[in-house]
Image 1 (cartoon, helix red, strand yellow):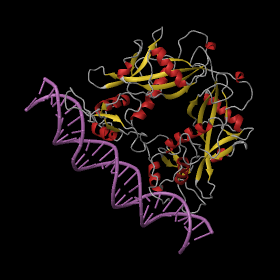
Image 2 (cartoon, rainbow over the protein chains, first blue to last red):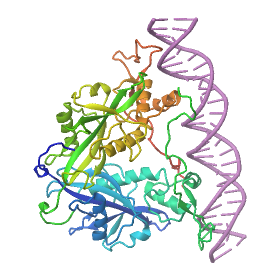
Image 3 (cartoon, rainbow over the protein chains, first blue to last red):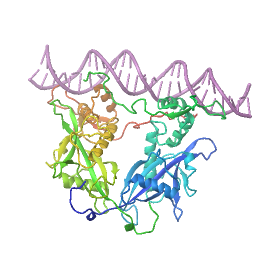
Image 4 (cartoon, rainbow over the protein chains, first blue to last red):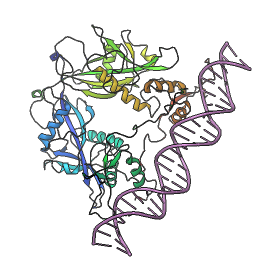
Amino acid sequence: MVPSPAALDAYPRPNVAVDLALFTLLPSAEGNHHDRLGVVVLRGSDGTPTLPGRMVRERETIRETVKELVQEKLSHRPTARWTLRMLDVFDDPDRDPRGWVWSVGYSVAISRHEADLLTPQAELLAIRGSAARGTRSTSEKLSYDHDDIVSMAVRRMRRRYEKAPDPDGLLKAPYTLSQLRHAHEAVLGAPLKRDTFNRRMREFLEPAMSRSGEEMFTSETVGRPAQLFTPRRVAVREVSEPFPLPRSGSVT
Amino acid sequence: MVPSPAALDAYPRPNVAVDLALFTLLPSAEGNHHDRLGVVVLRGSDGTPTLPGRMVRERETIRETVKELVQEKLSHRPTARWTLRMLDVFDDPDRDPRGWVWSVGYSVAISRHEADLLTPQAELLAIRGSAARGTRSTSEKLSYDHDDIVSMAVRRMRRRYEKAPDPDGLLKAPYTLSQLRHAHEAVLGAPLKRDTFNRRMREFLEPAMSRSGEEMFTSETVGRPAQLFTPRRVAVREVSEPFPLPRSGSVT
DNA sequence: GGAATAGTGTCTTTCAGACACTATCTG
DNA sequence: CAGATAGTGTCTGAAAGACACTATTCC
């Protein structure tokens, strides 16, 4: 904050836009059932893929801007369950040739089902395996610095998907452990071990219950039916307690 | 980004300030040698403690603003080693009674020695044990929403200090394992086990070497001299690889 | 020697990783 | 029945956690 009593108009103000990296799962091209991670882009008049974005409105929060952006550019209404995550403020003064324009990068994930409701102009680009910094994360070069936004979003997303079941909401509960694992494999870009994954995730999940109080399973699938799970309301244990905090009284 | 060809002036623009949560270690009040974490505040004309902050300048990046801010308000020149971390954009339209003012929160840590070089107006407030969301993180209420900024900074800092040695630079290398542990205890607000801590940190450290090629130790202290260490240039292993990526070819 | 701090050997417990076995569906 | 997918028991090895022992200084 600034203690100066001068009028706020005296300070220079950047234009501020919001750019949204909206992820969902894509069926694999090779015909096998493994999912891939995809990001929604819109094509500009010159055909360059671009993240949906817009300028902020007067006295509007960034989250409000994101929600309006989704309605206006993607013809879809975000629900309260969307977990919007701020990535960074992209403030290179030369990032936009039109002038001094900052972009606040946001990331969100939606289910395949919800993604089908987006405007037909919304296109899904598959995320490439290694979203390293400085690398293109999709097959096409995005406009502006949107490649940076996507690769940062993917990097953070991968961190979250290492610890907890579907933290961003790529799936709609209830889901099977296999569906959950495929989603995590799509985010991480690497195969996971079924047994270890199941055991690790179990503590964060609880069996989905039908209205009649029965545990729920898939049906009409090939193979043994899989049990359906939903995320637990409260986590069983702390997500991370890596250091040895003493268990009882004595402190050395 | 916005594809509109309209003049950028047509869009409303918020005032944008930067607020800095600058942390350092404080000697404990109780006279024992345990450190506490402290945050630098300045007192306004009404005596309310406030994080150092200022408006951004024309076509300036936020990091540049932070560095100028430190020079102007704290009479100190940041070095290249400072690890500035963006916390969040605080964009509640009512957070500043003067108008529509966003604040970009930043966090940084400096050594005690460097903190002594700050302007005498800089005051250090001790961080309280539990910096939970919605709680005051210091003994005094800070102005504006600066309590939120500090508590978010502390929460993120604690996460980082669970994994790696002094990731934010509270200490100046070389340091002993005890000094490192005390710093971590100050950040985490809880005592740590000496043996486990030492073993966990060793892989990220290498012995400090004198110019004559000898390992360095403390001297003139009570008790056995402690070896001095510096952070390794490159991390030995990946910071986190929590999921079972298959070791060899076969993928199930 | 005694007090104080540094550093580590070692035992136990816990958990990841790997493999394979059992379970239950479709056709 | 074969084929396919789901779920788990169990063994092994590695690492965390806990305790206590040794090491080296100052007084």
